[in-house]
Length: 160
Image 1 (cartoon, helix red, strand yellow):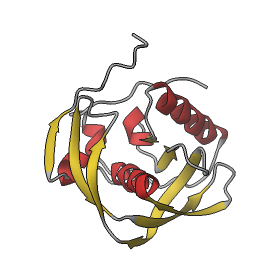
Image 2 (spheres, rainbow, N blue to C red):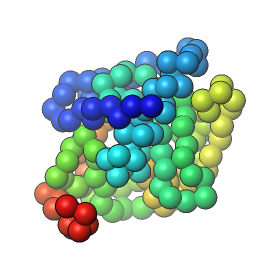
Image 3 (cartoon, rainbow, N blue to C red):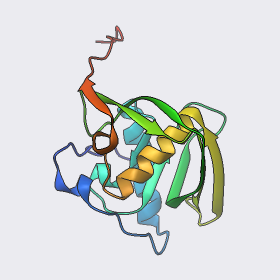
Protein backbone atom coordinates (compact mmCIF):
# COMPACT_ATOMS: atom_id res chain seq x y z
CA UNK A 1 0.00 0.00 0.00
CA UNK A 2 1.04 3.57 -0.54
CA UNK A 3 -0.05 7.00 0.51
CA UNK A 4 -1.15 8.98 -2.53
CA UNK A 5 -1.03 12.72 -3.06
CA UNK A 6 -4.44 14.30 -2.48
CA UNK A 7 -5.41 16.60 -5.35
CA UNK A 8 -6.41 20.07 -4.20
CA UNK A 9 -8.92 22.57 -5.57
CA UNK A 10 -8.74 24.14 -8.22
CA UNK A 11 -7.33 21.03 -10.01
CA UNK A 12 -9.56 20.31 -13.03
CA UNK A 13 -9.79 16.57 -12.24
CA UNK A 14 -12.02 17.42 -9.26
CA UNK A 15 -14.63 18.86 -11.63
CA UNK A 16 -14.85 15.92 -14.05
CA UNK A 17 -17.15 12.89 -14.06
CA UNK A 18 -15.43 9.64 -13.10
CA UNK A 19 -15.76 6.59 -15.34
CA UNK A 20 -17.48 3.35 -14.34
CA UNK A 21 -15.13 0.53 -13.36
CA UNK A 22 -15.76 -2.32 -15.82
CA UNK A 23 -13.54 -4.92 -14.14
CA UNK A 24 -12.06 -5.21 -10.67
CA UNK A 25 -8.41 -5.88 -11.40
CA UNK A 26 -5.47 -6.18 -8.98
CA UNK A 27 -4.70 -2.52 -9.82
CA UNK A 28 -8.22 -1.47 -8.75
CA UNK A 29 -7.81 -3.38 -5.47
CA UNK A 30 -4.42 -1.74 -4.89
CA UNK A 31 -5.91 1.69 -5.60
CA UNK A 32 -8.70 1.08 -3.06
CA UNK A 33 -6.12 0.03 -0.45
CA UNK A 34 -3.95 3.08 -1.25
CA UNK A 35 -7.01 5.33 -0.99
CA UNK A 36 -7.86 3.90 2.44
CA UNK A 37 -4.29 4.38 3.67
CA UNK A 38 -4.26 7.93 2.26
CA UNK A 39 -7.60 8.75 3.92
CA UNK A 40 -6.40 7.49 7.32
CA UNK A 41 -3.07 9.31 6.98
CA UNK A 42 -4.93 12.58 6.26
CA UNK A 43 -7.34 11.90 9.16
CA UNK A 44 -10.35 11.95 6.83
CA UNK A 45 -13.55 9.90 6.90
CA UNK A 46 -13.92 9.43 3.14
CA UNK A 47 -12.00 9.66 -0.11
CA UNK A 48 -12.99 9.33 -3.77
CA UNK A 49 -10.61 8.27 -6.57
CA UNK A 50 -10.73 11.70 -8.30
CA UNK A 51 -9.20 13.13 -5.11
CA UNK A 52 -6.05 11.15 -5.87
CA UNK A 53 -6.21 12.18 -9.53
CA UNK A 54 -7.90 9.06 -10.92
CA UNK A 55 -11.24 9.34 -12.73
CA UNK A 56 -12.72 5.99 -11.65
CA UNK A 57 -15.93 5.45 -9.68
CA UNK A 58 -14.30 4.27 -6.44
CA UNK A 59 -14.78 5.49 -2.87
CA UNK A 60 -13.56 4.55 0.58
CA UNK A 61 -15.41 5.57 3.75
CA UNK A 62 -14.80 5.00 7.46
CA UNK A 63 -16.77 7.16 9.90
CA UNK A 64 -15.75 5.06 12.91
CA UNK A 65 -19.03 3.19 13.22
CA UNK A 66 -19.90 -0.51 13.15
CA UNK A 67 -19.38 -0.69 9.37
CA UNK A 68 -15.67 0.04 9.68
CA UNK A 69 -13.83 0.60 6.42
CA UNK A 70 -16.11 0.51 3.38
CA UNK A 71 -14.51 0.16 -0.06
CA UNK A 72 -17.03 0.60 -2.85
CA UNK A 73 -16.83 0.27 -6.61
CA UNK A 74 -19.40 2.08 -8.81
CA UNK A 75 -21.53 3.31 -5.88
CA UNK A 76 -25.00 4.72 -6.54
CA UNK A 77 -27.56 6.14 -4.17
CA UNK A 78 -30.78 4.12 -4.38
CA UNK A 79 -32.86 5.98 -1.79
CA UNK A 80 -32.71 9.23 0.17
CA UNK A 81 -34.81 10.08 3.19
CA UNK A 82 -35.12 13.03 5.55
CA UNK A 83 -32.79 15.98 5.84
CA UNK A 84 -29.74 17.07 7.81
CA UNK A 85 -27.95 20.41 7.68
CA UNK A 86 -24.47 21.02 8.99
CA UNK A 87 -20.78 21.62 8.46
CA UNK A 88 -18.76 19.67 5.95
CA UNK A 89 -15.11 19.78 4.98
CA UNK A 90 -12.98 18.12 2.32
CA UNK A 91 -9.41 16.86 2.10
CA UNK A 92 -9.20 18.51 -1.34
CA UNK A 93 -10.23 21.92 0.05
CA UNK A 94 -8.14 22.31 3.21
CA UNK A 95 -8.88 25.23 5.47
CA UNK A 96 -12.55 25.56 4.55
CA UNK A 97 -15.85 24.16 5.72
CA UNK A 98 -19.35 24.76 4.46
CA UNK A 99 -22.90 24.36 5.66
CA UNK A 100 -24.47 21.71 3.44
CA UNK A 101 -27.97 20.28 3.28
CA UNK A 102 -27.98 16.48 2.78
CA UNK A 103 -30.35 13.54 3.18
CA UNK A 104 -30.41 12.17 6.74
CA UNK A 105 -30.57 8.57 5.48
CA UNK A 106 -29.34 7.01 2.25
CA UNK A 107 -29.15 3.52 0.82
CA UNK A 108 -26.10 3.02 -1.38
CA UNK A 109 -25.42 0.11 -3.70
CA UNK A 110 -22.17 -0.87 -5.37
CA UNK A 111 -19.60 -3.64 -5.46
CA UNK A 112 -17.04 -4.55 -2.84
CA UNK A 113 -13.39 -5.05 -3.80
CA UNK A 114 -14.10 -8.69 -4.71
CA UNK A 115 -16.96 -7.86 -7.07
CA UNK A 116 -19.74 -8.85 -4.67
CA UNK A 117 -22.84 -6.67 -4.54
CA UNK A 118 -22.88 -4.43 -1.50
CA UNK A 119 -25.88 -2.44 -0.23
CA UNK A 120 -25.52 -0.25 2.85
CA UNK A 121 -28.02 2.06 4.52
CA UNK A 122 -26.47 4.84 6.54
CA UNK A 123 -27.71 7.73 8.64
CA UNK A 124 -26.09 10.85 10.05
CA UNK A 125 -22.37 11.13 9.32
CA UNK A 126 -22.26 7.94 7.22
CA UNK A 127 -25.09 9.25 5.05
CA UNK A 128 -23.35 12.63 4.68
CA UNK A 129 -20.05 10.95 3.83
CA UNK A 130 -21.59 8.68 1.16
CA UNK A 131 -23.29 11.67 -0.48
CA UNK A 132 -20.12 13.77 -0.34
CA UNK A 133 -17.90 11.06 -1.87
CA UNK A 134 -20.41 10.11 -4.58
CA UNK A 135 -20.69 13.81 -5.45
CA UNK A 136 -16.91 13.73 -6.08
CA UNK A 137 -17.49 11.02 -8.69
CA UNK A 138 -19.73 13.46 -10.55
CA UNK A 139 -17.34 16.41 -10.27
CA UNK A 140 -19.37 18.13 -7.54
CA UNK A 141 -17.59 19.64 -4.53
CA UNK A 142 -19.23 20.63 -1.24
CA UNK A 143 -18.42 24.26 -2.07
CA UNK A 144 -20.69 23.95 -5.12
CA UNK A 145 -23.73 23.16 -2.98
CA UNK A 146 -22.95 24.75 0.40
CA UNK A 147 -25.25 27.48 1.62
CA UNK A 148 -22.26 29.15 3.28
CA UNK A 149 -18.49 28.51 3.00
CA UNK A 150 -16.09 29.71 5.68
CA UNK A 151 -12.49 29.35 6.79
CA UNK A 152 -11.85 26.53 9.22
CA UNK A 153 -8.98 26.48 11.68
CA UNK A 154 -8.59 23.01 13.21
CA UNK A 155 -7.87 22.71 16.90
CA UNK A 156 -4.30 21.75 17.62
CA UNK A 157 -4.12 18.06 18.53
CA UNK A 158 -1.01 18.43 20.67
CA UNK A 159 0.87 16.04 18.38
CA UNK A 160 2.79 18.84 16.64
